Image (tube, rainbow, N blue to C red; front, side, top):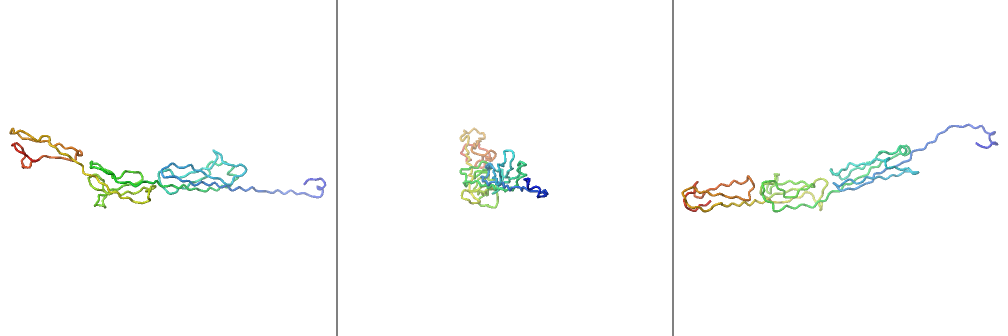
Length: 239
């Protein structure tokens, strides 16, 4: 109280009291993002609601934000998490903070359906009738024997079952794909080195030249239609 005229009329007692400043609500929300599978993660961001009187985060005093997506494992969605990080003590003291997760949505990679590879010829090694791709797996069966999975080496007609891996889709959205393809027999040419001799009483032999074979796959012997092991007399022989 002030004023001399009033001081004599009152006996003043001062009673201590308290008052409270409650924390202000602050909401930090991770923003939703989108990415295509296998692509690099987007920049994760957040929005803040509730700051007053110029309060703000700084470059080195701010929330932490993270996500489990790394481009190697496909899930349709991942949580984007936001947390305390390195938020300044002044902010923590004066604000009651709520952290709200965001969602990263991962889009599938779109593939065109593969067709059969043509003009495949027996080579003695495994062949592929469908172009390999990280987006699908291929299992081969001989046509006419659908229950037995095979490694396609020998000449024949095969049925390739193509199944998409996680994170991939066909352009038309279909599922399993079947492709029929063929390994053609290899053309082998045989020719004789010598076809004419003059009789001199000795055994005559001829050499068979082979071209177009796979090494180690063809062993050709020579025999005569007359069922004789030697050809010494003049005459014509069928080989």
